[in-house]
Length: 219
Ligand SMILES: Cc1cc2nc3c(=O)[nH]c(=O)nc-3n(C[C@H](O)[C@H](O)[C@H](O)COP(=O)(O)OP(=O)(O)OC[C@H]3O[C@@H](n4cnc5c(N)ncnc54)[C@H](O)[C@@H]3O)c2cc1C
Image 1 (cartoon, rainbow, N blue to C red):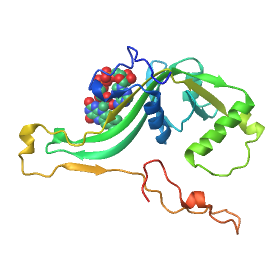
Image 2: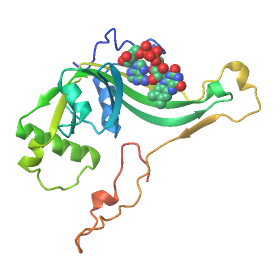
Image 3: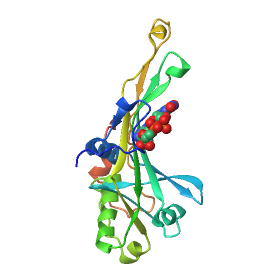
Image 4: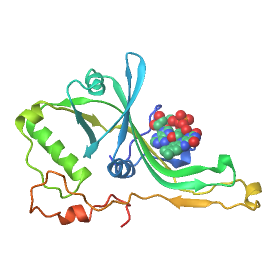
């Protein structure tokens, strides 16, 4: 299904016109964001932890150490609230309340499933490489590395996206004011690659590193 049906949890109450429930929209935001935040209740206390995330099909994946508190809690069946956010512009209005940001964000509610199959773990590692640095060539993961890492997958079945793309939205009475208002677009600008200090001599910097770009980044 290309559309995700809103639930009582994901129905957008504030500014519902900014809500999107198409998988394509939700996935494009999740794929572009480098970082997700995972919120979970640990012994009744909130935890919101930033982490790398990758999507394969209709699942989102995270991985980490077996004694990672977030992963242990999620493994035990706690519901996760996963968010990813991209800030597209600073919005400078004519009043303090006119200050805002244009953004694209995603909220996913899901329960983790543990991935134990080694071949599946390998595919997830490859997906992380491709997500963080497309084209990067790495050695294959060792079985002991795969065994020593917890991989969790989240079915994406209950999710929402919210997009603000309107720039300045000052009230009519402020438009007459003699002050500047506008937007500052924000993009990720990659720097020049820096060799690892222990890089063996003679290994050239690959083109994919020199030409590194995030979606929406500028040269
Ligand atoms: C960079 C950024 C800056 C923001 N600044 C502000 C601010 O200063 N003040 C403010 O009030 N709001 C701000 N928002 C919007 C904020 O994320 C909430 O949407 C808003 O506060 C409404 O919250 P609520 O709890 O009433 O949401 P509700 O509409 O009650 O949320 C219900 C459901 O809607 C979905 N939902 C809500 N918000 C989002 C979202 N952002 N992305 C995806 N799904 C969502 C979730 O599934 C959620 O469970 C900002 C968002 C971003 C990304």
